Length: 123
Image (cartoon, rainbow, N blue to C red; front, side, top):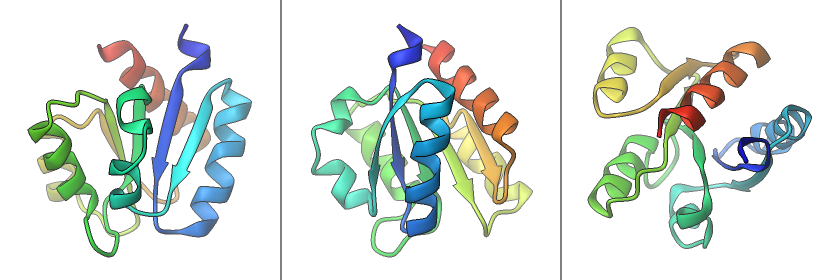
């Protein structure tokens, strides 16, 4: 059932990791947060998450690196990128590589919910 879908949040920004789970809970979703792409890859959440909200720019493995790694592993979790450092060219590139959406921070609750719905119903 979509309402109980697990959404993984991968962002090195602590304020995002603290605020997004509250918002996702209000929307009716379960969530788990990770401070890095490496932490996400090391977790059991990789095979369980129905959607991934992923920061583009992080120390170590970037969001784009994680997207590429998941594709190599044949993990088909839908990805919603979020970024404070994006531009339209970057947005176009990640969408071409299969991301469901790329939202520029700060984004609205409505924009995020729309992207999550698109991700969950994309499969």
